[in-house]
Amino acid sequence: MDKRKLLIRYLAGDFIAANLAWMAFTILRFYLIGDVATEQGFHSLSSFLHAPFIMMGQAVFPMLIIFIAYLSGYYNSLFFKSRLQEFITTITTTFIAAILLFFIILINDLFLERSKNYELVLVMWGCLFSFIYTARLFTTEGITRKIHAGRLRFNTLILGVNPCAIRFFESLKNAHKSMGYAPCGFVRLPGEMSSATTLPTYDLKDIDKACQTLHIDHIIIVPDKQDRNDLLTVINSLLHLNIPVKITPELYDILTIKVHHGNILGEPLIDIAQSGMSDSQKCIKRT
Image (tube, rainbow, N blue to C red; front, top):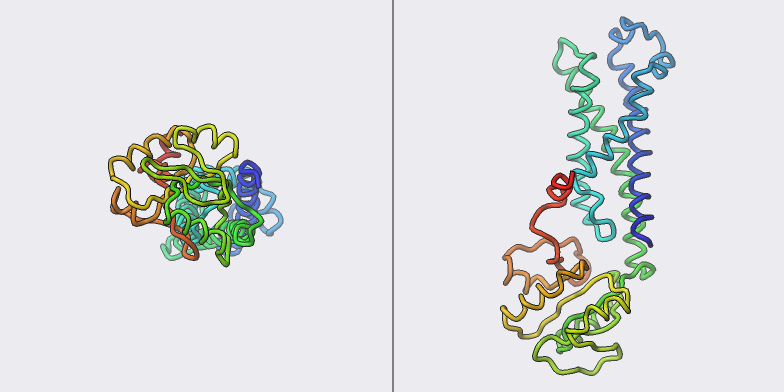
C-alpha cells in the first residue's frame, strides 16, 4: 500500500470522525444546557443545529483536530503502529481538543454549578475519543491484518551473513504470522565471509546501489560478534539512506540502554535511524 494513500485514509478518517463527534456533541449539548439555549433564542434542536456558530464549528473543528493530531506526531509512522501508543495518543489529543473547545466555544454555556461545566467537557471528550479512536482502530487493524497475512510486505536488507543472520532470516520466513518484512538480500559486515543463502549478497560499499535496485524499505542489522566501534561506524554509514535501520534489543541495549518496540508477536526490532526526539517534538519543531 502506498504511504501517501494510507496517510489520506487516516486524515479522512479523522476528519469524518471529528465531524460525527461534533454533531453528536451538539445534539447532547442542546439538551445539557437546556434553559441557556432557550434564553439564547433556540427553542428547538433544529434551530440550534442550524445556528451559524454550530455550522462554522462543523467545518472548522475537524481541521483543529487534524492539526492537534499532526502536532502529536500521530501521522509520522503509518505502517507499524503500536495499538497501546495509538490509544494513549488519541486519548491525550482528544482531551486537549476538548479543553480548547471549552475555552473557545463552550465558555458561553457556563453554569454556576461547576459540575455542569465539567460535564460539558467530559461529554465532548467522550464523543471525540469514541468516534476518532474507532475510526483509527478500524484503519490500523486493517493494515495489521494485511501485514500478518503477508499481503503487505516491505523490501528488507539484512546486514550480516553470519549464523545469527541466517537464523533470523529463517525465523522471518517460517513465522506463523508475517512481520511485514520481505528479505531481498544480505550485506556482509566487516570481517564476515559469505554464507550459504538463496538471496543475493552485497558488500557494504555497494549498499547504496542495492537499496536503489531492490527498492529497499527497511534495513535490519543482525551481527554475530562485532566490535562496538565498528558497529557504530556501520550504523553511521547507513543514516544518509533515509531508510529505517533496525536492530535487536540486545544490541540496542549496548547503544542506549533503552528499549521500546510495538511488536509482541515476532522478532522485536528497534528503529535506531530515528532521532531521540519524540514524534510530537519533531512535528512541533517543524511547525
